[in-house]
Length: 78
Image 1 (cartoon, helix red, strand yellow):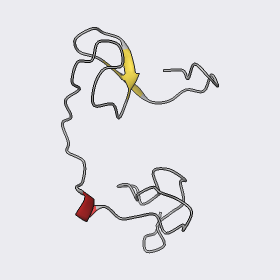
Image 2 (cartoon, one colour; image 1 turned 180 degrees about the vertical axis):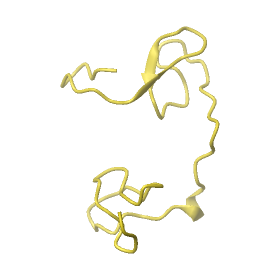
Image 3 (cartoon, rainbow, N blue to C red; image 1 turned 90 degrees about the vertical axis):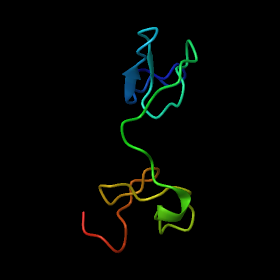
Image 4 (cartoon, helix red, strand yellow; image 1 turned 45 degrees about the horizontal axis):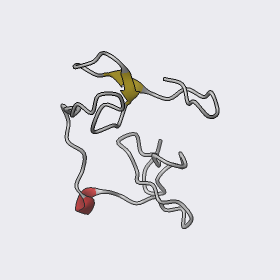
């Protein structure tokens, strides 16, 4: 899927109802509003590990890096 503003690409999935692309982390289809079901549940707030960069609002993902800035978690080897 391409960004209409900058032309960059980002991960997407296909809506099972209308067949259009929507951003990968969407809860609803951007075109038809159909709920997007997830096979895996996201971690709750108490289970998330915050990025150790004091200026970032991201969380550490399963790969051990921040999902916003990409910095590795200080406590894990990448």
